[in-house]
Length: 428
Image: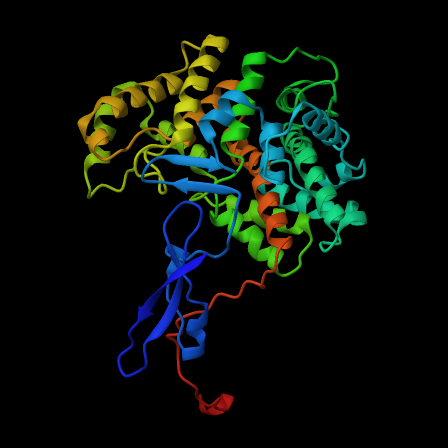
């Protein structure tokens, strides 16, 4: 709602009035769309001060450590709901009642299998290919297998595609892992929960079906919830930008996966394990803590602090408790890397240097430890992130298409050569 205006004073030109928009919560936003009529536009690298869209899905207050999905605090969702309830909430705006949940869960389970011919698609990849490289390919290829629902102007087609993506991502993620291991791919089981089914497809084989630990399944479900959406981050913005061109949903999600693959975005929990490898042993902690405090040293403690959360990451509190439960369930006592991680956690929570700078362990720190303890290789961490974030991506895609939108077309500040003539080859 625009209830007041800002005035832009440009030397030698008439003042420009710009509406100030207010949301239901959060800072005011200056609407600069009319600025182009003056022959000018804004310069904002990284869009750090620019709202690219209007959304009702997720709200973040980084200073206060608040993350809300459709108004519900992430801590409450992680404690009182499960991942598929959170999916329903993100897609539809409200938490489901018992009847709605049963119907939604049943629909998702009916779509967990992938086209059998998709298996042969994997054979085109090297066995040692990075799992995210394969995910980019196979998710984009879904549009070649499920082209019966690609009319983005049809609400029913959008709904079917959303369900298919949420249902099939765990199957595809597990297939990627099994392919890299040279093991048979496991079919989904509809008698299991979403998280149980994923762990079943990851770790069981046709010759040995082991029961899924409820503690590990609950931990996996919480990891999915805590990564389900995070407002207009790089990958979500990529999905929206791709979608604004009219691209099909599978191509849009593949674009999101590609953006998430970047180490500055989705590779954070993978970077935590790499950092622990670099430190090597508990005896080296003091040396690396000193390096982290030295502003002239390039070493950084990964998994501490957050670009958005300037106070604390609200997801980390949930993840810390879950981490403790997983380590207790698995009885891991002699893993040097996990011992190192727990010691770093203790130091960061008590050292005045870290406390004064709000460099607390974040969700990536704990999720990396949990995934490692469960037995998931580091190269699969970002795949699991993509699996969880798919519902956020598709919710934003659906929201954009359900209201008027424009194709994304950022401007630039050009600093290259001015117009010049092409000389013949002989005279250059």
